[in-house]
Length: 229
Image (cartoon, rainbow, N blue to C red; front, side, top):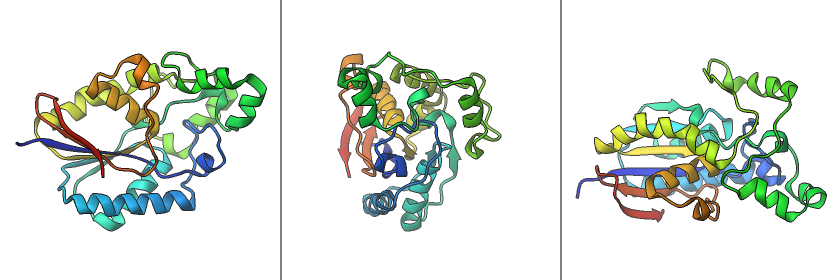
C-alpha cells in the first residue's frame, strides 16, 4: 500500500524544560540531555530508512537544533523549511516562570487549567514583553500579522491549521514523505487534526521529548500506522 510517511519529533529537552519553566515563544537552546535525545532520534530515523521529500522545523532554536543533530546522522537531501506556525504554544505572561512556584502561588488546579485546558488562555504578556519577544532574532523577517500575547491549545490549533491544509495535506495526497521537528503543543494540534481527537481527549495526550512518532497516512488521510520509533 502506497502511503505518505510523516515523522513528528518534539525537540529534545531544552534548558527551560530542565528548569521546569514555561517556555512558549521564548527562544532557548537545548540542554546537553536534549542534544543527546536529538542524536538518539537521528539514529532511530536513520534505521527507518525513509527518503524524505520535505522537512520542516519551527523558527525556534530548540526545534532547529534538534533537526541539525538528527541531520548530522541522517544527512538528508530534502529541502528544509522553517515555519513559524509550527512554534510551541504561546504561554503569555507565564513564560519564564517556574511551574512549581506557580502551583504554590495559584494552586494546582489553576496551573493545570492554564497548561491543559483546551480553550483557557494563560495571562497575557505585557506590551513591553511582547515587543521584546517580537525582536528576538528568530522572528526577524517573519510576517506575523497578529502577534499573539498568549495562546490556548485551541488558538494553537487554529494557528497551525493553514499550514496543515495548504502545505501538509497536498504533500500527503502526493504521497510525499515528511519530517517535522516541532514542539509538544504544535504536535498535539497536528494529531488532533489528523486523528480528529476530541477537545476533552487532546488535553490528556502527552508528547515525549526526542521520540520520533511515525505516521503512515493514505491519500484519503486515513492513518494506517502510528508508532514511536
